Structure formats: structure tokens, C-alpha cells
Length: 241
Image 1 (cartoon, rainbow, N blue to C red):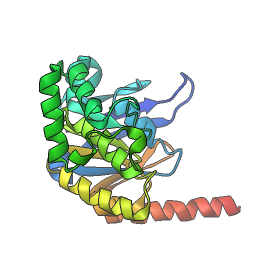
Image 2: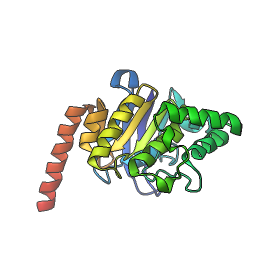
Image 3: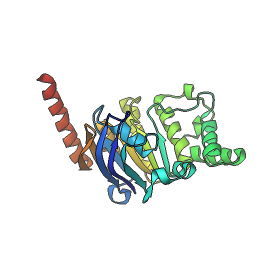
Image 4: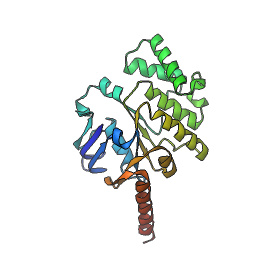
């Protein structure tokens, strides 16, 4: 379980992007894939950075299985909470398998031989073993996204955060990626930040809608999609005025 309590956060001491955010991610009740929906500027990525400990909030708390994330040591936290940002950050001079090996040796302290075997097994399990010897520049958008997720999953985190995972994908690739992610939902718990309605419908059963740095609504995905559509309409009416 991931709990967010009275979280306020911004990028300068006087600015706030998130305002008193309260969320409980209860994956046993909500399903293994939970979506955070919202328009650009709603605070989705800022929330993701707080959850992944890349941004410290002005006030409030994030608890991971009842533990304050800022009280956890770095290795313990990174072993439980993975994150894949929109830019992916694969090392361009390393093959896909070498990217996984580096994660295992740096984060978990694995020896290179053991890390190599574990990386190969992970790629095979995820159905992308054919990408093992490819470099990031040789990959399509969908392949690179899978490789970045594989690098996080090889560490066997309990939770994995994804930031706009379909941003660089076309419609057909998005549908394939959604099906792949659904299969992975049996291995870990995902929190996905997105504004892609169809992708959300294909993957998540439960979601949170953010608006202006506040939680506007929570509930099942169809309920959230309807609410998201209303914010589209409201924003359009404001723009016309």
C-alpha cells in the first residue's frame, strides 16, 4: 500500500504545485494498475516525483507499506519502488541487457555474472529477449519503453511508477503495449501517470483525477473518464470566454 497524506509540494519555497493531496493506493482493492489522470499542469508528474523520492515535499508524508519513504535507506527504497520517467534514461552506450546488468550491480550489489544471468532471464520472461544486444538508438519507441520497464522490473520492485508511458507511441503500438502491461500486472503493482484516455481504459480499473494540484475525484476508470471529459469541456468554455 502507498499512502499520501496532506502532501503539498512545489519547485520553489513559495510556489505550490500540489495542495494537501490525500490518496491511498490500495492495490488489493483497486487492482494492480492504478492511473493518475489529469491535464498538463495538473501536478501529475510532480506527484510522481514525490512518490519516487526525487522531490521532497514542503509538507505532508508519503508512506510505503506504513514506512515514511524519507526514513528508508536509499537501497531499501529503490528496491521496493521503481520509476520510469517519460525520457526513459537508458544509457545509450550500453545494450539493453547491459542496462539491466548495470541496474543490478549498482542498486542490488550483484556480481556481473549473476547479474547477466538474471538480466537475460528477465528479458526472456518479459518476452523481449530479442532486444538484449540492441542499443537504445536501434529501438523503436515501443521497444525502448519496454526496455526501460524491464530495467526497473529486473530489480523486482513491489511498486513501479510510469510517467506518460504512451507519449511516444502510435495508436497500434499503444494497444500492444497496454496488453503487455496488463500481463505484467501479475508481477508488480503499477501507478501510471497519463492523460491518454484509451490507454487508461485498456489497462487500469481504478484511478485518481488531479486538477490544479488537487484531487478532484477518485473511482473506477469509467467514472474518472467521464469526470475528465467534463474538465475538458469546462476548460474549453473558459478558453472561449
